[in-house]
Image 1 (spheres, rainbow, N blue to C red):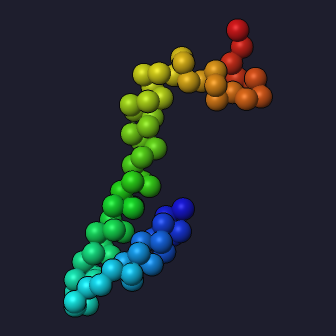
Image 2 (image 1 turned 90 degrees about the vertical axis):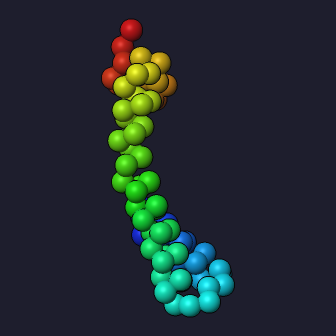
Amino acid sequence: MSSVLVSIATKLNDYENYETQPAYDVALTQKIFIINFITSYLPIFLTAFVYVPFASRIVPYLDVFHLTVRP
């Protein structure tokens, strides 16, 4: 997923009009950093702030085959 998003960021960066190569490199580095941060830490944040506090409400909707949650 990260490689797909990085290729999209590179294409978006190519469409932007930078005056110098260093400005282009800085903008691309910022985009890649943000993409890597989101793809790396989003699962941790979802687990900590969504799944753990609201697990009793979310888990019944995640069990589509009725294998883990039994009444």
